[in-house]
Image 1 (cartoon, one colour):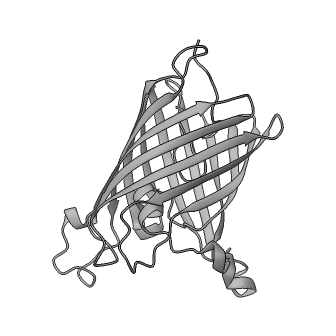
Image 2: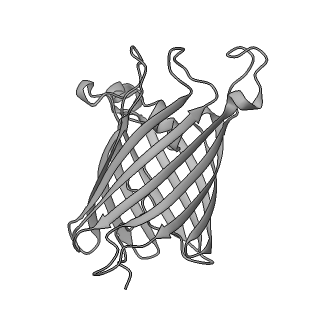
Amino acid sequence: MSVVSAFKGLKIVNFESTKMVAKKDFYFVVAHRFGSVKTGIKDFFGLDNANTRLSFIYGFEDWLNLGVSRSSFNKTYDLSVKYRLISQEENGFPVTIVGYSQAAVNTLLDDDLIPEVNFSDRLSVTQQILISRKFSDQFSFEIIPTVFNEGFVDFAQQDNTQFALGFGGRYKLTKRWSFNADYGWHLNRAIGSEFKNPLSIGFDLETGGHVFQLHFTNAQPTYESGFLGNAIGDWSDGNFYFGFNLSRVF
């Protein structure tokens, strides 16, 4: 028998979880990140400067999901496919393995940034393998090997093709509440780059037909190559963002 509900949300915080949208279900997801809390009362601790991503996800099969999204960060559109390869079994296979593929297009780039900008400059492509295990009713953990390619990078010495290893977990506190956290370890960050590894912590609240996730993160972008390659917040300097993910199933 397959193990169910390693994660209740489609996201851990920033990273995808191994949860799938069921066949013929349709999800609407709002991912919202306010500005940095470090700005203080001037910008009402970030509430005046926000990044929003709207996603629509459909379950073609229990093991196959297709998503389309639009993010205000770099006016980015993305298309994603999520597909379960194998499920954790009680007294059987020890983990759930899911593939996640995404292509994102930065529509903010113009000739002032890149002379004669073309589509390949705008495009970023991400491939991830999500490997999770539900250790108990309370605790689940996931590892996310990742490779992504950005057509345009903001730091000249940075390779376009980049590698990362994500980690994330969920600890159930009550019937409806859980504590979640995830972290992305960038493996070939260029020396001198201002960008940081994304670290996020927060809580999930299950309320009937949706999961409401409240969290703090040092990455304002919400799509994969964005938060892995372009996080500028620094927890040690008090530079991080409050945000939430809200999922509604129809």
